[in-house]
Length: 501
Image (cartoon, rainbow, N blue to C red):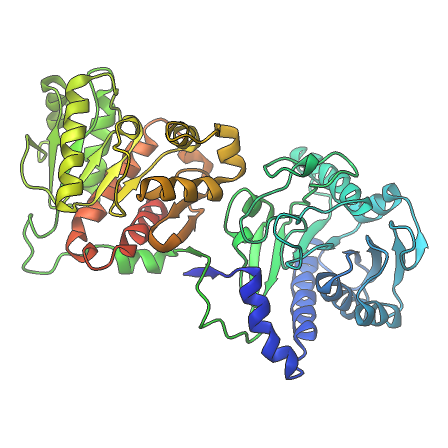
């Protein structure tokens, strides 16, 4: 499992080591230089004679980058530092200069010769590697955007790199972010937009909000939430975490990401004496005569996931389609351990809406786990429970929130998905699985998972139906474990997203 911690928790863990004189910056710079060396060898076939441009801000993040630049210069790399602030980290700047490196500044009064941002961008774009050390985890919450000439450099360099990659030429620099890509919301994963509001998109030159997308992010001590949470995680590239010896045992992870071994541990495996009822029975209310395929996909996913039995409730015509595709499915009501409600359901279909309402009443009265998807999301009671998993995409979440008095649209949800998933969890008390390129799960006690396992090829009609059936099978298979451990629901939702991807 990959776990991320807030900037405050990381800084707190650093304090006793810094007080004891542990050279954390030296360790970070050494590891950062090592990653750059590997990238140079992989991409250019050499280290000596390569060119690296360091974009450095005033904080410790810039200090890490400057010290790494000095180490690279001693290995024969031509290093140029571009100051984006009036001052730079003192020991980092001294180390860089003692290694014979040049320093220029795009900020008035900064160290080195004053250059125009366009000149700095030209230098960076023709380099082999660019180190983004403009802004790290020291930015205050809500003030993470890069501003001034640094924003101009990041914005225009980012446009050049993106255009070059879109053209498939592959001649631009490798961008290595130092700890986090500069300008992202470290704890919430937001990407500031021009004018100071949060959301996806890049800023015009010189305006706050520029984020330079990295090929690699070298993060220190522990991953930060922005490296796992959208939209910021899309700018992180490959993440390499450097262990600095921090003791984070007393801190609560802010975000977790399951890996295949975690999924294997969570998956319900039947013992030798198992039978269909102990393996879990999932009830499905899905599909209508207009959308019979949703029902077929949902029950097929549950069957293939290994559930003991699937019970299906629907119209006679859809039931016939389901049983013809999956003859082991049992049509009709009966005892279940979990429900899947809503794939392909038209809320105006009174018969299916009544089935959804009846199942939800049982879910809340009997504390049965349930997956609520698609059409059933508009049929919810005001308050639910943690053992109910809502599985909206961004548009559906916006509709759900708007029905509860929030002034939000799909674009806002996509710009700040963690914020709005948390708000939906707060309003409904349900566990929320927000589907996307990176799927977020927010569960009891604000447990957050971020799964980025799905390839873009999964963006197809019916994929959500399959996820719902898969998750329903997991909940049914582990239903007996959920009563005393409600947080397990969120972990199983994340597990389903991983396996689905």
